[in-house]
Image (cartoon, rainbow, N blue to C red; front, side, top):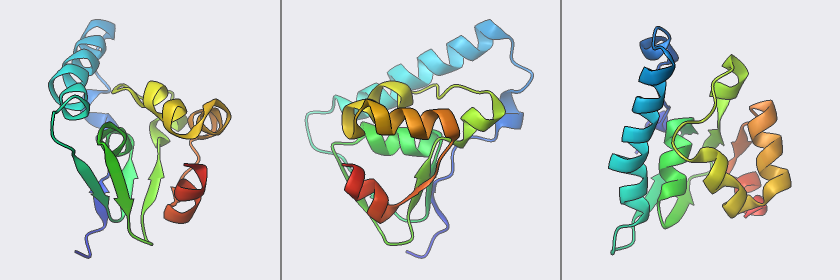
Length: 122
């Protein structure tokens, strides 16, 4: 309803001080407690994307069974431009949804796509 973001992702500054083990624990817990749980729910979960779905926001949308996006939706994994690998299944779910080549382009370049391009990609 006119919001700027579905989910704009995490503030990388919040875990910039994490060591490797803390980073692994955060990724594993988030994956198990939210993203996998959403994907494996017995009832369909629909992501209504309006505005930005970036980083963990896109990963959350990809965990849902169906994604519906407004014309002003923008999706991407910008954390890779900071040297951070998507931690909640983005590198696994994106290729399953859009194919390996398109996923690689988005992951390697931090490319952000508009709703129509995302639809065209699958």
